[in-house]
Amino acid sequence: MKLEKIISISGKPGLYKLISQLKNGFIIEDVLTKKKVSISNSSQVSLLDNIAMFTSDNEVPLFEVFENLAKNEEYKETISHKSSEEDLRALMSTSLPNYDKERVYVSDIKKLAQWYNILHKAGYITPESFVKPEAAAEEEPAIAEKKETKKAAPKTEKATTPKAKASTSSAKSAPKSTHRKMG
Image 1 (cartoon, helix red, strand yellow):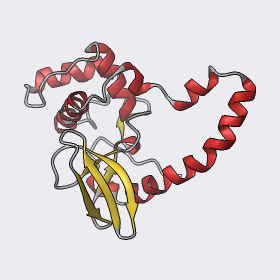
Image 2: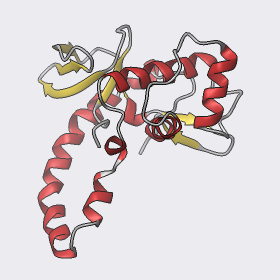
Image 3: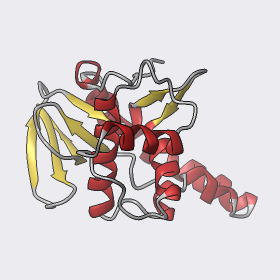
Image 4: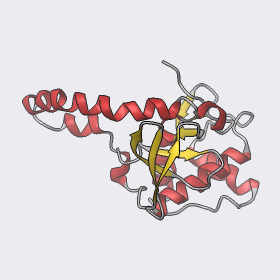
């Protein structure tokens, strides 16, 4: 999935792609300008993959909300994050109909619209963006799938190392309606 290494950094506008891990930080790339910079381990980083939004009965991963929003908008840009509270709540009602109106604040919906539009401008909002790697592997023959799984396992472990480190400091910087899942 193209969206899995996208991060938000507390105190910095925009969204970034996690490129690699350094001894004392990370190399990141602005999703819009493609400018690469390094940040220290002390930066408060939130991996979008670890953020969820509250519903009346559970939590829905942010990327599922993005996917619903993308389908509703026909993979086009959505309303501005500066839209009225009424328009933002209407957007949320169509993207996540059973969202918890008491725990999902307007500021959270603004962030959702802003991040979605940034990702859209950067070319991340496409039908292919939401295809999970496991779903693609299931379409292959069983023998090829077993070989893929064995080869992909070490790569997956390496790819998750920066995620785990990046997400360790995300609790403070995550929006109010989000929840980092532990374990």
